Length: 224
Image 1 (tube, rainbow, N blue to C red):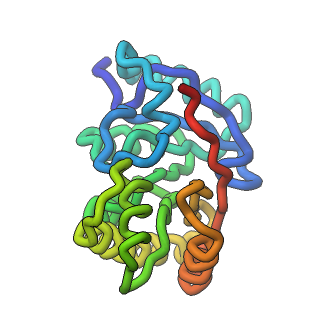
Image 2 (tube, rainbow, N blue to C red):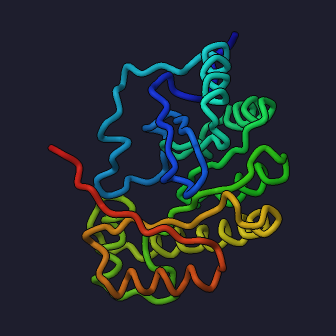
């Protein structure tokens, strides 16, 4: 069998990532991401020698997960939407009767729309990493660039482009969330130390207006 788009690594089983639902996590290529987020745990812990799992091995893993009562397969990364073989991998999972959630940074709204149209995904976890608003002060621009790109710079264009894409992506996943009674779609924020309390409150206000469930996750520093 050919190689799948998912890494041949341990598959965590969790009730935490999708509250109340027994889930298992598969990973696309970890370095494949268009952001360079502040102290990214997945990138920091990635072993460059890791290979992709064959579809034969993936099938065996998914069958075992089904026997363990797993209902939902969560696809994380990296940025899974950059994986060119993602759609075929999602179809493979769906054919085995699992629901599928894709974790995304929200910067690829066109790909989100395509996956929804192809009916290979049941929900998304989308990261809202910074406050979504129309005007940013200089100190915010520097802090938010550091969160998104690990570079403290005064580049407002990059922030505005990120915000524009996030808004489009949320519009698209909200339609899917409503159709599925918000079962597998959430918005998430990591409580980065670079975010002030007023930033967190701004994010919460924005999320409340979307009506999509929200998860505020703690920040854990990457060990040197």
